[in-house]
Image: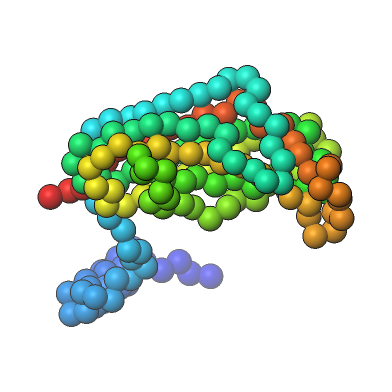
Length: 180
């Protein structure tokens, strides 16, 4: 079996690169795998709150587990990370977490979908979730890391058994000014 010569291989690479360049110039809206996004500057502030021990026992009603007040001086994007460790999340349970942004009057400005963490025989399950809030106007806000527990479809547990401990909670919020 013969190997292609270096000349033929480099010619093939050059041809493919030329085709991609022509397509990109002629059809700029094509995007080639591009996702929509936003661009900001360097973070103007980073807010952190952590509880390195026991946070709370979570039931199926759920609620805020950890929160952080943030100040936005000029229109900005907020990037929030919620880190936690589930304790005693039984096999037939699912731990659900989300992140919410509330204005100073407690109205919800934005929130994420819930992320699910299946229970297991392992006594501890840790995780980190992240969510961004775009184009937040100046003001004071509170970012909440929230959690609840539910039975898995096969769980069939009574409401009284729907609980688990949440430990090692941390919430970090980056305030990123909107790029001009």
